[in-house]
Image 1: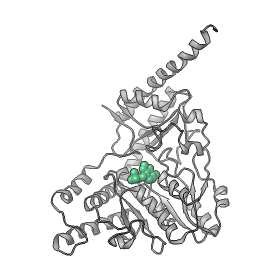
Image 2: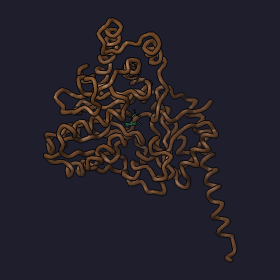
Image 3: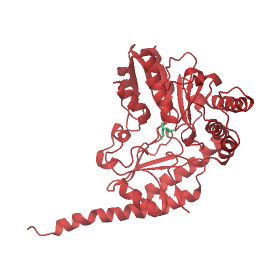
Image 4: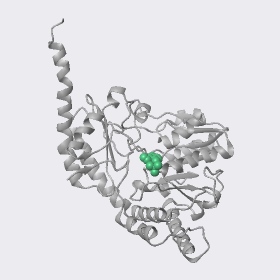
Length: 391
Ligand code: PLP
């Protein structure tokens, strides 16, 4: 059985979410903005879905803006606020590019993190002043799984940048944390459907009442003038279904998958003793989401390892799906101070709502011999070079 261990990149759709969206693809075609009965029916489905999404985020239904994914939600939060108010933007150095790039595009300030990926609160204080209009700090990191202390961040922001809104990217948190509680101090919260068993290209931004936000997409006034464009009824209904199930089963999933992740990490560290558990070098995983096992393996290159793993039907990634394939080591690892040579040997194994013990067994069977093979291979030219007689 193949082992899919790249759930942080995208997790399989929940069958119930597929079922929920099918009638809206097959049987109903009306535009929910219309006035006739089929249109009103579509609007009712969107309204019900909006209620569910709002509940999953601890927001009011009127505070939910549906978007075309997590990237759009992040862009809307960061740039939509800036378009309205200007001012200085601040983000942590390990944000997803969907936040970092917009912040950089407005010459914002980037705040460093420690070796575990936790935001440096002293550096945050230095970045904050009354000119700051938005601070963006993710709830859970997509690459190494670190969970940020958002309450503490919010305290610092309220004290030193009282006019700033607080945005949190909860895309990777939704499956693993009580996001209602964890995101309570935030004014803007982004989520993405395909990380929780919904379809790709669907997301939402919760915009707490009174938060300044200009639309990025102008059009027919949909989403209370915050995001123009015909609503994707099928995607919205599927997002709501996936979120409902995610929240309903979250405690059980975290417990079950956490055990699998721990067995995976412990097993790999036993088989490859010099590997480093990147965000938990001392073995303390209490600040990580339950689904991520991120290792840095000395003496190998991720791309070569991923190639061998694929041959063994283990599907993983070197880091975030956006960074993999690039020749530069991941910016997240660089921000955490991981040495460049070590960062080249990074491996992210991410589990999801439907991961099984078989996935872990297969990974434990395939990964250690693949690492050993690469190391043997890497040593060979050095031996040859050492034994070659000088010309
Ligand atoms: N934010 C985080 C933390 C993510 O992990 C991702 C996706 O990898 C995104 C935002 C972007 O979401 P989407 O793929 O829906 O655009």
